[in-house]
Image (tube, rainbow, N blue to C red; front, side, top):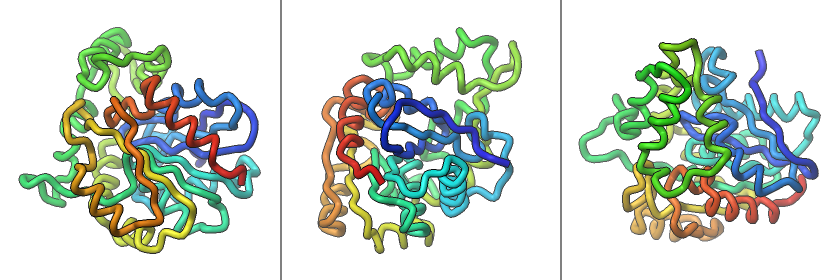
Length: 276
């Protein structure tokens, strides 16, 4: 069983790893801004066209899948860029398979999150709010699903042309009961690790690869603060002085990779990554 993989562009390869309820097509806008690099974007286990792949899930399993993808494509070594949960996958992959990874670009993710006051580790999906609720919904048509996303506050002022393809790709089943492709089981299993599993903590504490963190000032619902508060980022800067942290102005957790401004900034940093 192999992951579904989307590829764009030509040139030196870079592996792009999507977020917890997303798919490879989340990188479409970055790819449009980056024709000079070979962007390799797998659908993670339990998502997209890989949603049929069974558990176990978790960051070490995803890391193994990333290495299997490199093997299948005959790529010996490459930089990894990860968004949201994908940044956690990238960190753990580099920690477990250091010789296969040349550098890391973490985009609004990768560093352990703090649980909201009313959420416990028994229900970490509650912290995802509407992003998790969407997986239980059904839609009568592709047009209905596009309308759902058009009403999403994250895209109220930023609707790139590539977003329609991402939305259409995300649907499974047949009308009038189309549903998002992400496995609820996969989301639940993976969400726990974002708050500090042994694999994630070790990958942060023993970070040895060249790495950079790009953050969005606004969150999943376009709210402030974003995924990481200014205070949290200040703490991480003290803990990891070797990790440059930069904010991408006027972006939220989605548009930092799926909007035109964010994608251009991410693409520019990818160009700086070593070839392998």
